[in-house]
Length: 358
Image (tube, rainbow, N blue to C red; front, side, top):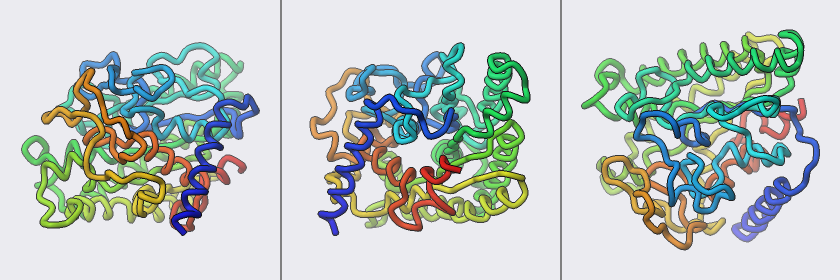
């Protein structure tokens, strides 16, 4: 079984490499990305915030060097874009101009959350609500390029949208009681419900603005990040189980959310990508042997890589790049299985590959 998985993963990596070389027609006309630091590709660079990484060793394995991606190489959005057949990386909203926006725009922002106050101790960030406002700006530009609002709406209906929010609503909100009151206002179950309710409204707004094919990414095992392991007691476990249990309450509501959206909204095709399921297996089958330590030297206050320090050489064996963000190899794993599910539990009701075909 392990050998078969290694073969599959090798084929996936080769496929991704070919995607970046073959200039074929993408499976969808455009790809729009909403999220946090897991997909941010430069939107935070000009903001007054701690959460920006436009310096080495970030980008050490990325063709363009440091760009603001919270990774040594490609982030999750980059991987999905290549699998969809795009021969260029989707531009960040901060720098996307002219006809480039017809290929899509990345609105992701490090530190951002579903809740507007999330991440405020880090400085400026672009919350989900603000990302939706930025998307409306893009729509008006697309309408100008295509000649009318009707033409823009018809075009956007065919595009693929991915949304990944919620990690910071825990890491940079609920799990910081010294800064945020949320943990005293809500039990873990109540907080998960409140988040889902607000998220649902945001996703319905996205639909109102033309999105029809939407992949929603659930949260990973936040309690297994080096940052959370270092700041909480694990009580002998490999991870902080309390945090993972809290996050599970949030993830468990996604199937019902997707069902409700697809039932309530005409022509909607929402899917859920189960990141926890995808990342719960044995990572050693793809060569990842270090799962509880960062590859780079991290700041004890931010968990981000210290500037210009030499990172580990064997980056393909590390799951985490810094104290919170995955390495490129880990992003390839999640992105590959989000696009082409390997088990029925990876995606619900189906994967991104099928969503793109609809």
